[in-house]
Image 1 (tube, rainbow, N blue to C red):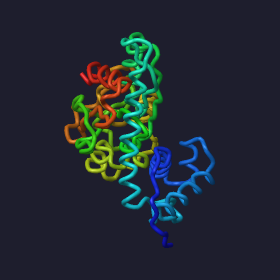
Image 2 (image 1 turned 135 degrees about the vertical axis):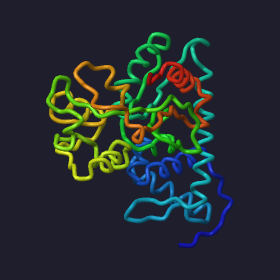
Image 3 (image 1 turned 180 degrees about the vertical axis):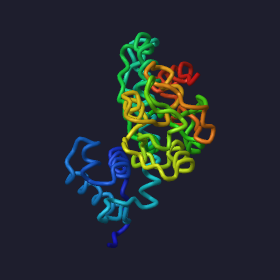
Length: 292
C-alpha cells in the first residue's frame, strides 16, 4: 500500500494509540488498554498511516508488528507517559503524601516470602498507595512498561533496566521433616519440580545433571508449590534457603548446592525510578529485602 505524504501532525493521542498497539500487539489488546473498541484503534492507525504516508504496522496472523518508525514513536510516547506521571505526582495533597498505583512483578515465591511482608510495613507510612501484584515468570512486562518494579532471579539482569543486587539465592535439597526420604535414597524418592514451567531454572538443570534418570512424579508451576508438596511428604525437591527457613515442616538434605545458585535483583526502568510512587516503593524494598 502506498500513501501520499502530507503535512500530518502527530498528536499526543496518536502517540498513545501507537504505544498501546506496540505493547499489546493486537487491536483488541490496544483497545483494552485505551478503554476503546478495536475498530476505533484500527481507524486511528489507518488515519495516521495515510497522513504520514507510511506503514506503521504490518498485519499478520501473529498480530500487529511495528515498523522501525512505530518503535521510535513508541519510545517518544513512553517519555511523554513518564512525564505526565511525574506531573501528576507533583499535584498531591501534601508533600509527605504519596499516592497512586505501583505495579510489581515477581514470582509467587518472592511475593509471599519477601514482598508482602515488606509492603505490610510500607502500608503504615504510605496508606494511600495501592498495588498491582503480578506473578508471571517472564520479565517482558517490566521491559514493556507494563510493570514499575520487578523482583527477579537472574545472573544477568537486562542492560536497559536499573536495580539493586539483593544477594545470592542459595538452594538445597529438602524433604518433609520426620519423613522417610534422605539424601542417600534421593534417586529413588518421588521428585517435585517445576520442569515444564521453569525448564531453565538452576535447580532443574542441577537435578538433570546429578540425577539424569529421575523423572519428577509431580510437575508444578512454581517453587512455592514445590515447598508445599515437599512439606506434605509427597517427595523431595530443591528449595531456596530463604523460603525453607521460615518453616518448621521442612528438613534440609545435605549441603547447599552451589552449582544451582542464582542471584536476586530488584529492578526498575530508568524512566520510572524518579516517579514518587515508584521511588517510594523501590527505596523501601531495596532497604528491607534480605535473603539472610
